[in-house]
Image (cartoon, rainbow, N blue to C red; front, side, top):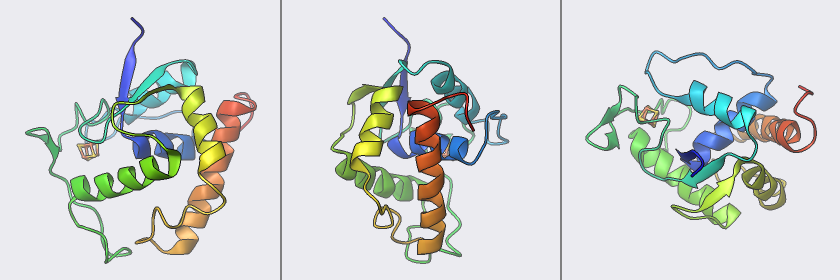
Length: 160
Ligand code: SF4
């Protein structure tokens, strides 16, 4: 049985976006979460299996904010006043929108490369509706980086 990585859709998408911003090494975070280990796993194995998880995933599991099967953290609402302050609620909102856009749901299993192919095919030319509480110019930059990250996984992993 291959190692299955439980991951929130937006957590995986954030990793692809960071790679599109040029990041290749992910360092441990003060929160203790597992972005760095999951990022290195997906970069090392494009056939690794992702299981979509809209609750606590493998990244959240060791995080200091993982309390009683929930995230007790809050988000910075200074640039997104319409967003819920609870990170749990915000994440769920974004993940549900991504699932709808991509035609995916809780517990679906896809490989890293399959998820990237679905993203490229389904995300469309404008993802601002998914991040509608965030200033549009920030989302334009996010989408450009995401597209570069997808090129890393789908076209040439040796290129930045
Ligand atoms: S969503 Fe919350 S529990 Fe999960 S990694 Fe982020 S801060 Fe930690």
